Amino acid sequence: MVTIEDVKKAQRNIRGTAERTPLIFSESLSEKTGAEIYLKLDTLQPTGSFKIRGAANAVARLSEEERKNGVVTASTGNFGRALSYAGKQAGVPVTVCLSRLVPQNKVEAVRELGATVEICGNTQDEAMARAAGLVETQQMKIISPFDDADVIAGQGTIGLEILEDLPETDMAVIALSGGGLIAGIALALRHEKPDIGVTGVSTRQCPAMYESLKAGHPVDVPEHESVADSLGGGIGLENRYSFAMVRDLVGAENIVLLAEDEIKNGMCALHEAENIVAEGGGAVGVAALLAGKIKSEDIQGKKIVCHISGGNVAEDVFAKIVAA
Image (cartoon, rainbow, N blue to C red; front, side, top):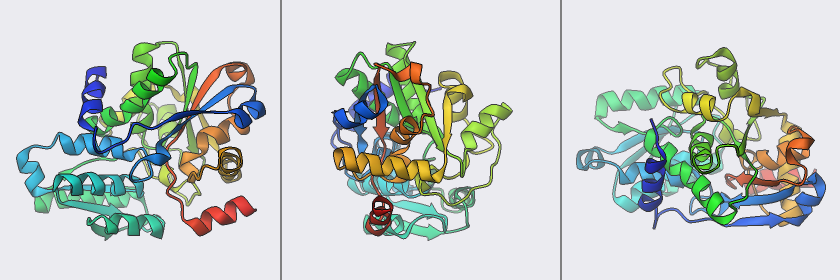
């Protein structure tokens, strides 16, 4: 189980590797939605996404033997980049398994940080199976991008920062894939404000956590290509942490799903309103509000924080979306 004390320890562990990112008010998005919209900008992290928080905490918590043997993960790109960065700073060898769905710009970003990269399979789950194999053959420690206690605690530092900057926050709108991000944030937020609203946003292309919550247990779902590529992949049938935490702290009734055009609209709106370059997964919070996915009475006049989780989108892809 992950506790609030774990999150507070993580806040200390990640200093010097991850940044404390700003929370800004968006007048333009507030006018469009009728709410007071604030944006938590983890696009400004050294590796371009929030993932550095969990990766830095996980690396900080390694034993000496684990540091020597190295670590392995499977990633849709952003966690692989973050773990490579944190590992390089700490002198820890990193291997990253990526599926063929991962965009080339994210593959190259991982390689540039000195990690060993393996391209394997057509889905995130297949890449994770390869990572598990390396644990058996090379005694590496596997670090899940979302279902790891140290990673979840690291992501929870976002929640601490939100309430430090805006204690009167009424709701946080958070991207949802494997659940590590929203689990950590919800833990931190609800410890201080038990009644705070927390909404998760997934893509219809791979709503693994949503379907698992509806089923009452982790299930596999088909994974399809999405502009929100960072939200791909399953939650693991042997899920240890994130499923139960999202079930207990968020619930299926507080998860919304977006179509591809709705996600692109969120990317465009962020760029137009605040000149922010957000990848698809980073824009889903704003996209959900603009698409009317959250009840009007739940947001009107309320202070709503949208977590902008990442900005690692290829320039040509982003240019095509905002020009459409």
